[in-house]
Amino acid sequence: MNASLSHHGQNAHEDIGDYVAHLQFHMTLQARNLVPNLTQAADSREQLLQETQAEFEKQISRQAIQRG
Image (tube, rainbow, N blue to C red):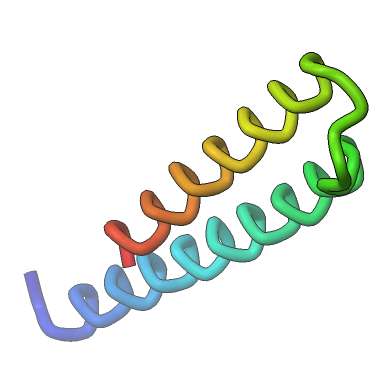
């Protein structure tokens, strides 16, 4: 493979990576609009929702760091 095609492939890979990062960011913002803000839990169901949300966000942020 010549250098020009290799460089083009690398640029395409970077463009896709940028697109995916932008899409993940957009999805994170959308998800934040779909779940309630963390406040003092009124009952055990709300407490469970808050704990699940926090755990999910931790897992997602760790995956982003490992890929970066």
